[in-house]
Every structure is written in structure tokens, then in C-alpha cells.
Length: 154
Length: 480
Image 1 (cartoon, rainbow over the protein chains, first blue to last red):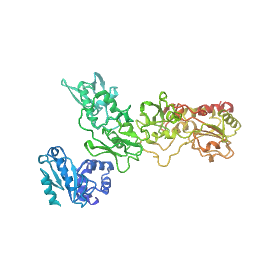
Image 2: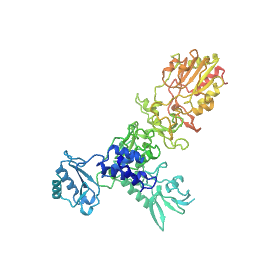
Image 3: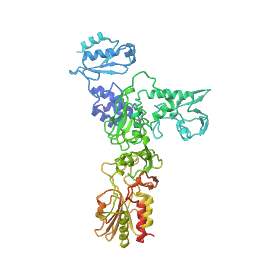
Image 4: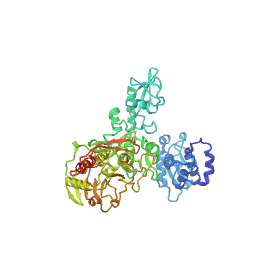
């Protein structure tokens, strides 16, 4: 985390004085982008850098499904379960992924290739149901499309 | 100051006050869960909605976050308000298990009270309730039932605004939200953590030491003063009501023990809080008692012990007394009146700080771990006990005095409440009553005097120090 401090310093200038604790979220996002997840040393680093109590970092980490405290596999599959995707069959999508990959949400395949997560709204309700793979959206998903997608990634 | 009308009563309230505060000050009740007079306003529970008259109509909003304004007309119990409250309670109880029958909070639960008062209906939800963790160890002292929690965040705000441990937070989101302790153990180390049990408006946070010990309606509080430090916080000592006495043979501890300790609000001393040490007073007062008088370690009757002490005092040339900083003002005054002129008197600290306890902080805890040092010093000065070599009689009152400081030839008269090895080393030992067995007053470090009241009868054979001193003086020709 230490090597990101110059970047954090730049971000800090955009925040009013006394609101440094608001930087917890952008700092954690940047750390995750850098490391792939937020490690224990990053939590302690953010606490010390921003002078915030540990509970504030923990609250942010647990509130947002996009922040994680463990590394994920090569491909991170995030299936949306929010209302629009649910109405368009996200439960079936999720069930199909669980069967296909042989893991439950929150787990990673033994070969470290796939991690499956269930997330709240991805903001693409018009193309529900949506599955996100790393940074890419895969829209209007169904079983065939999923099979094809997984084959390409294997 | 703005003038406003609440439920037809015209009141005046300082600008900047909220409708909640103004109503409370005027004695008008508005229900609340998340609001607390000593904490910030989160406005999340919505139960304190009130109606405000506007252009012939009425709008409703929360009283806890509504500033008073000139000419405002507020209704706390209109049809619209009652309807809204009822709906709010439906939401608040949406995932609440309604297991009052097995909940320690029953009888003093705000949610239970409001449900009877404002809702009184079954849940209209057809969906199953969200399950969450039960019997979760929030700390070694506190058990959390997340299903009962209504997420008012009072406990979280307490750790951020009062105890300053930042020990608690809300984890996850929506109906998966959980109160959790920080992973760094800051809540475990919070010396004020048990206050969250009192401020929890439901039965989510429960005291492990009181868990399933008693229904609260079998208990009654005795107003008392915590003797744990020189702050002298006002406390309630909860003990079994005499009419609900348990009659089995081994029930003395149940009937005559302190079941739990809670703060008694006193703005001049402790506000509505006490520290965890105060919660554990049952351990201090529950220690083994000395109940028999002794002459050089041999049991004697109280009358004989008093007679022997009197004769020792009559023949003493240089008597010295070490008085207790746990004595009440009344007892100390009785000593002064009866024996003050006969003795050279020092005040001692009965209790010293223990390893692991907070020595002193900026909230309540004081370094002096005795309740009445100020009261005792006001009468006898603040010189540390120094027994002169030529003292031939030493009267020691209370525990915590090192008998090796007494010249070997000097006779010892010892008054103590507890069963301790020193008792047998005294020439005369007289067992005395403890704070819970008498009425009295302590004066705290800041000079505030607080009263404590009797909740149990003293054991047979035990004397009140207040009566012992005049009895010693009666024939010794001291003070009178």
C-alpha cells in the first residue's frame, strides 16, 4: 500500500479539510485494483494513513460487495441478484454457474481459475440478467451463452 | 425564544432545540428508539413521527430532527401520526422474532411497550423472517441476538461518542446488516461497554452475567453509590423483591445477593453511564463476610469484644486510629464525635488499583479506588497514615491496611466486614456491616455528596460502625 501514498496524496487535495476519512473508499478501491484484494496490512495502512478507527475500514469493506478481503481466481464471475435480473431469471443463471463450476458463491475453483460471487445491482437492468467477468459485462445471459463463455475462459 | 403548540399546550423552547427535546422538557411524551439524549441524532427508526399543522392540513416528520419554529402547531397523537407509527412498527418488527417469553429484556423493553401502545397487531408480512446470528459473543461480557436487533445504532454511536473506543460498527448491508465488534478487540477493551446493554431499546444486547438469571419484575432497585472509585457514580442495585423471595434452603445468595447493577442517572456525577467495574459490584459485596467477633483470634460475643476494646482504650496512653475511606459520612462523623479527641487519626485507602483495571480516564474513572476519601479527609486531614513508634493502641477500620506498619507492642482493635487473615491478628476484632446493609452518604472527589440506601439486613452478630464508636467512647471517657 505504501507505494500508493503519492496517489492518495493527490486525491486528498480534492477533499475538504477535515474530511480525510471520506478517502477510505477510494483508497480501498485503488488498493484492490493494485493487489487484487484488500489485505490485512492494507487495512492497517489505511487506518494509519487516514487516522481512522479500524471499524470504519471494516464497515466499508463489508458494505460494498465489490471490495474483498481475499484474493479471487483468474476470472471473477459476478452474478447480479437484484430485482431486474431476478425477474429475468438470475436464479437460474446462478444455479447453472454453480453446477457448471462445481463451487458455491464465494468460492474459488481448486485450479484457481474461477471465483463465483453474487452481487447487488450492476446498473445494467435493461440487459438483465447480467454476469460480470472481471471488468467486462456479459448481458442478456442464458444457459447457452454461459456455457460458451465458460468454454472460452477454461 | 420560539413559541409553539404541542398537543394544544403552548410552550416556549430555545431556538435550535428539536421538537423532541422541547416536548421532553415540557413533559410531553414522544416515543423513540434510536434517539438518545446523550447521543447524536441518526433519525433512522422513524417511530418519533409527529404531525405539524400546515395550511389546514397536516404533514408528518420525525420529532428528533425537527427544529422548533415560531407558531408551529404539533400533534403527537393525531390519527395520521398513529397510523404512521403503526406502519413503522410493522417494519421494525418485520424480522424481529417476538420471543419476549424467553427474552431477558421483557418487562423493560421499549419495543414491547410501543408494540402494546401503538401497534398491537400481528405482522402483516407473508414472507418468512430473515434469520441472523443468535447468542453471538460480542465480547466476553455481552451476548448479541442479531434477530432481535432493530439496528437503531445506539450502541455503535455510544462507542464513538461516549466511550470513544470505536469498538462497534454495522457490517454488511440492508437486511443482512449486523452489529459487530471491530476485529482489533477495541470493544473487548472498552471499560464502559456494558452501557450498550442499557441503551439497547430491545433485547439484542444482553449481559452475560445476568443472562436468564431473573425476570426483571421479580427484582427491585435500591439507589446506591458505586464504591469502585472516587467518582461515586449513582447506581441501582437490583435485588429480589421480598414478596418474591425464593423459599428453598440454599437460596440466600438469590434472595440477598445483588442480581445486577445499572446506572442511576445523576447529571452532577455520572450522567446516565457507569463503567464495567460498577457492573461487577456483586463480586465486591459478595465476598465472604466476617460475622463473629474475636479476641486474639478466638471467637467472642460482640458485647465481650466491645467491653475488651473499651478497657484497652481506657488504659491507652497514645491511641492512633486509621479510618476507612469506605466509611459513610455518618459513620465518619460518629467516629469524630465519639472518639475524635481521644485518637490521633489518619485516613487510609482501603482499596488500591488492581492490575489490569483502568487507572484513570477522562470519562468517569478516577485513580483513587475508594468512594469517600474526600468525606474522610474533610474530617481528619489528608496526611498519609504514619503510625508513631510510641503508639500503644491502634484502631484500624476497614480492609487494606498493612498490619506490619503497627508497632509490635501496640494493641490492635480492628473493625472489618470481610473474612480476612488480619482479623485473627487483632487483640479485638469486631465485624461490621457493609454499604448494602445501611443507609448513608459518600462525598466524591469533586465534593458532590450522594446517598446510598439499605437493601439487605446485616448478618446476626455484625455491628454498625456508627454504633460501635459511641459504644467505645461511653466508658472510655473519650470525646464525651
